[in-house]
Image 1 (cartoon, one colour):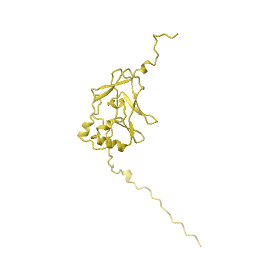
Image 2 (cartoon, one colour; image 1 turned 30 degrees about the vertical axis):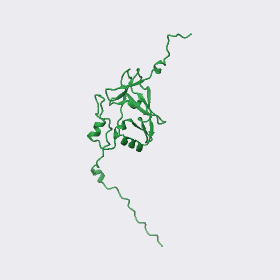
Image 3 (cartoon, helix red, strand yellow; image 1 turned 90 degrees about the vertical axis):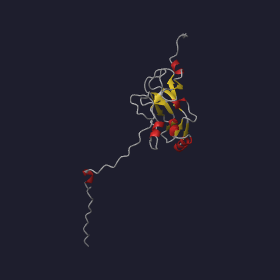
Image 4 (cartoon, helix red, strand yellow; image 1 turned 90 degrees about the horizontal axis):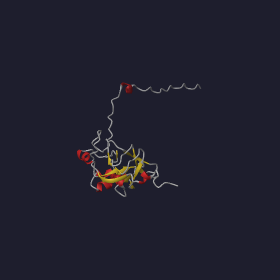
Length: 191
């Protein structure tokens, strides 16, 4: 006969892993409601899947690029807009020393997983270097300032712009002519 005092091992999984509340980092944040184990799938990043052009239009209509923080790029070139039919995952703040990571599953859904042990009441965060194709002006950098407070904080949530490589001067090896194919005329057939 089972004892009423014994609890099944799955009880912690019944307790929601997270809650949303005000964050000292920025706006709302997502916090561990209970201890979370490394590799645990915490929450799906939900929202409406849209094309990149539509995402750009939505950001423009809302007054600028700040809405990009709710956009999650997919491998198929589309974007999940967490601000449209999204859930609490859109409130997970960025950190340069994240305790979570976002992984796109084979079916295109995105889930947030714990990178290591996360203690109850600890804020959940992941690194989301945002791609902003326009100039990274001081105003834009301010708009996307990182406030994570990590020792190695980069100061921005923006992904570094790809560096344009300057053409390197030709080295002496590059200047050595490639051997030309020489065609030797065949002797005329005696006739």
